[in-house]
Amino acid sequence: MSAVAYQHFVQAKADEKAEKQAPFVSVIIPFLNERDVLEQCHLRVCNALSALNQSCEIVYVDDGSQDSSWQLVSQFQHPTHSIRSLRLSRNFGKEAALSAGLKAALGQCVILLDADLQDPPEYIPDMVDAWQQGAQVVEMQRRERHGENWLKRTTAHCFYRFMSYISDSPITENVGDFRLMDQKVVEVINTLPERTRFMKGLLAWPGFTRQVMTFDRDPRLAGETKWNYPKLVHLALEGITSFSTKPLRWATLAGLTTSFFTFVMAMVVLTKTLVWGEPVVGYPSTVLIILFLGGIQLLSIGVLGEYVGRLFIESKQRPLYVLMEETTSAPTFAQSETTK
Ligand code: UDP
Ligand code: MG
Image 1 (cartoon, helix red, strand yellow):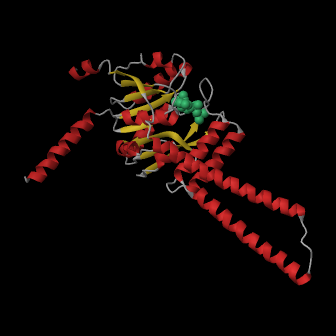
Image 2 (cartoon, helix red, strand yellow; image 1 turned 120 degrees about the vertical axis):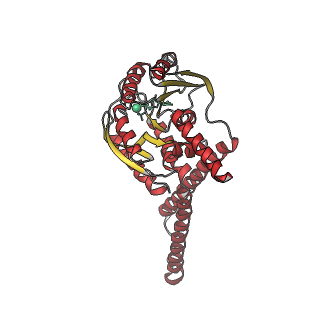
Image 3 (tube, helix red, strand yellow; image 1 turned 135 degrees about the horizontal axis):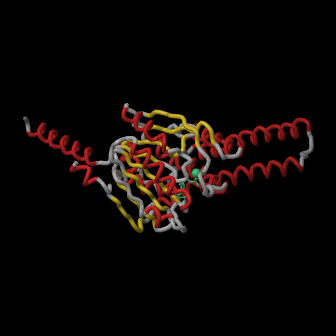
């Protein structure tokens, strides 16, 4: 065997060993003040993972909870699965919490799940099945949005359509964060450095082979959604400005179009005055045109400002989150199982 071939052989063996030691599946669960649902969530996730008959890990990420959620999760244990809990130093937002979980996850594949059980853990075995059959990303598409009103459903639908239109990496409609990703995909996502983390876009960006599975999204088990409309508008703006520069192009086009119409109008007024000698009239139309142009200008400056603001935040290079505490609970019966 040549030296190069031997090196490849050694590397392959090392990879194989690392893979064997890695948990089969990592489930990442970010939460903020979810005291009332976490026990039930833990129970259902553990049951779903136990159906896989492999050692898995659950990574809880406490996104700055003020209730006793952290005390609760840091006590969680399981006979066959390892439970890791990360505690962020304050509320950094779900996107940062997910990023912390993705960095920490060791599994051969990773599943993102909400703590409020809106994404039923019982789908995990089917998702893992699809992954084992070759899909590197399994996206869970919501069939029904139970417990969400008409306005939220409609605005969400419009937003997905709009994002798919402006973004280069296609975002599947009605697919939230609930999904499975192969470790290879997670590695790529972990290299994406941006601070403004529009997760749906970042998760879609790497590509890879995808499979879409439909599921019925349940209502929240307890507590209230952390998303209000101002937050959703902020998220939408973040998504648009971090994944497309098309709004800047539209601002330019709006400028060009208004300049063109102004030129045509100027020609008409000039001809009327010079040829027919009509006096220049139209105080109301003058005011309207000034207001219209003022509106377009302010809008364009606003669009520009959104991008400059993001550049400002990116340029500071602050960390995405700060880890305050971390606990790991190894499988409690792992030792006895290996000696059986
Ligand atoms: N969450 C979080 N940090 C936040 C807001 C939410 O970790 O700043 C968690 C929350 O505890 C839940 C998940 O993200 O586990 C989804 O949040 P929520 O149910 O409020 O969102 P919705 O399902 O209404 O979109
Ligand atoms: Mg929810």
